Amino acid sequence: MLELRPTCEHCNKPLPPDSVEARICSYECTFCAACVESVLANVCPNCGGGFAPRPIRPSKNRKGDNFLGKDPAGTKVRHKPVDPVAHARFAEALRNIAPNLR
Image 1 (cartoon, helix red, strand yellow):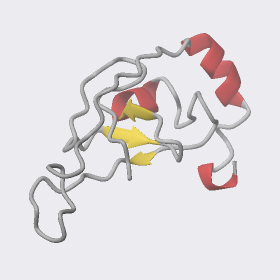
Image 2 (cartoon, rainbow, N blue to C red):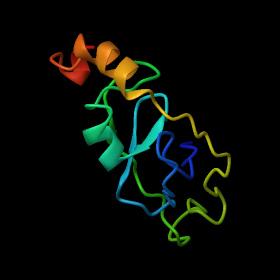
Image 3 (cartoon, helix red, strand yellow):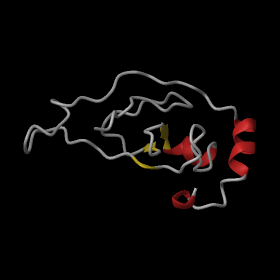
């Protein structure tokens, strides 16, 4: 079950469960689309993987209790701003490798 973290780890922008701006890596590190593009260059600072849009959990119980009311979004904020210079060095070796090949 995805945790649906509430904010961007870098800029702390709110990313509610229905946000189309939320991006996650395979470990659920969560960043906003702007930070993924402008700061991170699609390289996760925690694992080196790429990002994908975070799925949106249904807000209404349409079938089988699979909705936000039964499985609410996470509330724990993980605000760990990335050092842009250090991340640029880390990402340099990875940015030309497709995320599926990292």
